Image 1 (cartoon, one colour):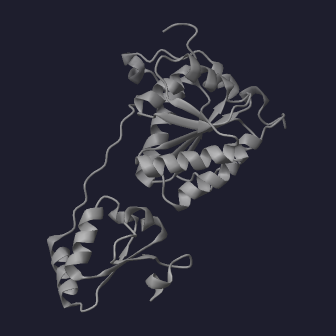
Image 2: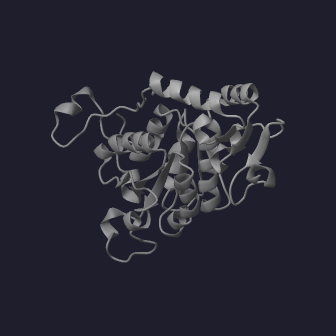
Image 3: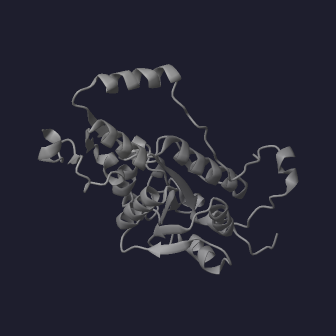
Length: 274
């Protein structure tokens, strides 16, 4: 470990370990240590500067939707943090994994009504339900980052990590192999995977019976068929079935296909309503 390596540098290393290619945000005094670490790192995610934190949050959501990965957004404390809410609620309601790295004032002034100090845990409590944590010590940082990414991916939702300014500038800890033997330090790794769920054969057989019995079959496609686009249209052509989509299923269906009637619901098409 070199003495000039900081927690902000460790954040960048952890983002690289999680295969983050881009981080969206807007500069402020609270997140300057992290932005400096991004600039000096030999390998780091690209910082995509938006004109406003709200825009940055929506950009991170779009990145996650179209890349299939986790969107990452960064902001300063106080007003910058509040600006993230619209984009993070979009992620929550569309079930998109997003990690927000939010700066906070120095830990020494929290509770003093200091400039731009707000209670971020209260601000993000609803939108980041599965995981919302403030990093208070350098040793805590890797575990919090890892758990944030795992929670975002497991629950398909936004999560928030709060990084006080003085913690970002603190010397990075020595993450040696013996940390697991030290009281109060948790060993962690930047990894996540999931199982493969298959339907019961009896349920598949029953579904086939229903489709065989149908005379005018219609298909409502949701976001669950994102990985089965061709299979969906093959089934539709086999059954001569009309296809409509939920709002979240819309990106995964070719609307130029003659069997596709468009999106259902309040913002849907007249064809899908018929």
